[in-house]
Amino acid sequence: MRRYWLLLLLLLTVPLSATPPLRVGMELNYPPFEMVCNDGSACGISVDIAKALGKYLGRDVEIQNISFVGLIPALKTGKVDLVISSLSITDERRCAIAFSEPYATAQLAMLVSSKSTLQNIAEADNAGRVIAVKSGTSGELYARNHLKRATVRVFDQEATCVLEVIQGKADAFLYDQLSVYTQSKRHPTTTRALLTPISTEHWSIGIRKGNTALLDSVNAFIEEFKAEGGFQHLADQYLSEQQKAFKKLGLHFIF
Image (cartoon, rainbow, N blue to C red; front, side, top):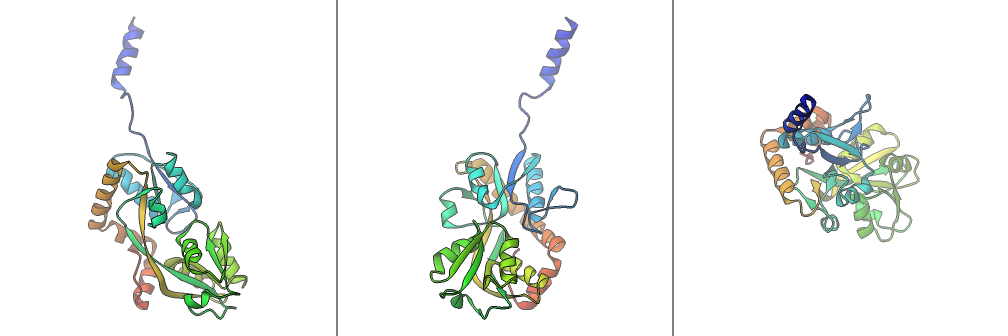
């Protein structure tokens, strides 16, 4: 009988349903935004944003490493609750998912092979030009819509696209301005950066359609985090050198 009462007491003191963790999808292959650290843990700007959001919501955060092209399907099927993966807002994606208010502004640019004579995006749309893009990115979308005469080669990884440019197999890699700048500094003898903005896009948090309560909470978090200097703090922590360089070049910085 005593055992029965102890069991009953235990059931009464344990909540019937604990708050589930916030499952956040991202591709951990885009440093310094989404990456795997030396100890094997997820880290980077987007990871820190996810953790700050979890704290704001009072929920633990569970990061799920998913290929970029698989993020929206994972969100739609309920595998994850949110996508925080440097995800640009596009009309095509709006048909599939909902977006929070933007938290960053990115611009498309080109990493060009030193072996190529390419000087601008207009010259890219010519027969004989080869343009590398990463699958599922806004760079691929732009190339599909605007580069009708060039050969567009689609790869799964940023590193593969960069290698195509380094080896002269592609004239250019169409990607975000910040990454283009960073890669050009890593490979100064084999690449050059054309940083003139090709298009402007906004990064947002992806949310499953119909989940208006979570959407409202995320928007409130973004507003508060921005007002408190959270995004600027992350930029100072992870992108200090790039901020200085962009300011010197007169370019808009991402935050």
